[in-house]
Length: 253
Image 1 (tube, rainbow, N blue to C red):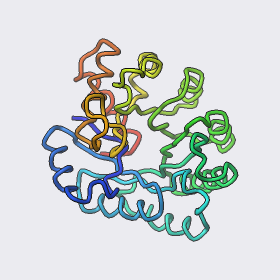
Image 2: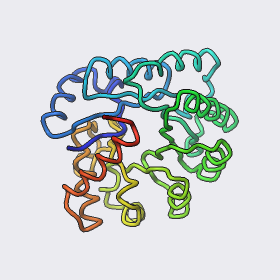
Image 3: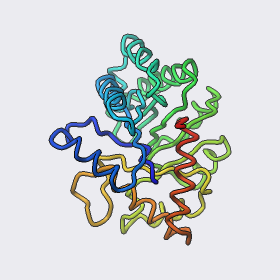
Image 4: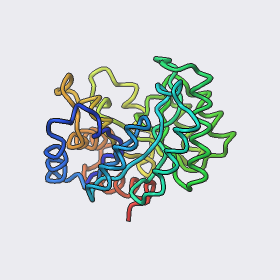
């Protein structure tokens, strides 16, 4: 069994065949899917999908791209969502200095507010950090965040070691299969198996050979296969370790 710990099945890219995508994933050994909210509206839909499907769990949050629109009302409405038992984390949240679609100041404010929501709800954080390693770590350390996963990990070795020292998990996507991802594969190689989770980030980041097409949870197997190749272990070993990690992190019984 594999677990896709980060995708966006509520996005419009799946509107025409969402049920089929989910059915196909289950039939091909994807035991659970974590659907991650990126805005209030997406978080509401993520929760609704999780309630509808036994195999889907939800995270609720606000992506840093949307931080300029973050408000106290949005925070209160997200608080209402976390009372549902299928909501397993706050995310995705964090900082993105690559595209800067929201100001850095507003990204930090939203990040802090959502960290407080996670603490008050006793839920872990799903963290987005792109070209913002220093500020991401500073905020996580200052706020004494004890349980987090850095999704779609793209940082350097120092960032990885800092995250590991703080006890965090990291998740890798299908981009580790790309021909020009040698630096990222080196990061995979040195990351302990007891800290790795798998994800697709669908509909984005389809694996090599399928680039340009919509990604979906079933493709998480390509991540497992590539990690097995990089580390010289079996796919079964990768599946066993990453499934145990995901179940522990997201409190899936």
